[in-house]
Image (cartoon, rainbow, N blue to C red):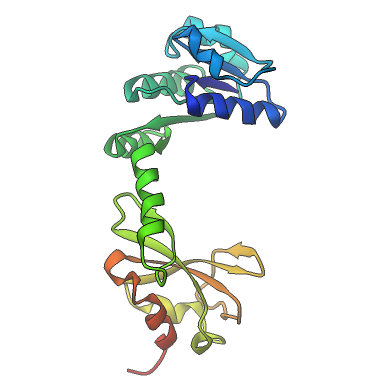
Length: 218
């Protein structure tokens, strides 16, 4: 496993990967950055730029199973990620990107990204939304959310398809006895099921009310 950037994220990621039994190499342009690594770190420490192919060779890029670029710069992260993926064919490549618009672009190019701003926004929204709108996930700018709702008694025995009749709501997943699944439209809802419903944010507060009347004659 190769990590580009030995800041707070990179050093913590290195520690966790090593704890899980992986061989780890960390690259950083500043030798002092390696002081953040936990004592006893057994992996490689390479000083240099992560998009430099010579540096990547020294880190063992040709045998790497994964490459994570978490430096403080978007450009460095995406360039090094593309070199790892397109030149060295590393199976798993991910880059941290601060600009959410750029993250979307690189995602389409096949580079897995973690958009820091988008992730932080998602976490904030989960905490500041009213308690009656349990948000499990937000999509990009938060205009679309996925809420987790216990199936109300009114729809127990009905099929998932009755909820999806209106374009504003859609059941994207269902959890039953702790086992998640993507439900077929004819799946019968049981007591205790947790429904993960996608909706436009402005409609999210009405999810519980909608579910309780789903399938009723108009």
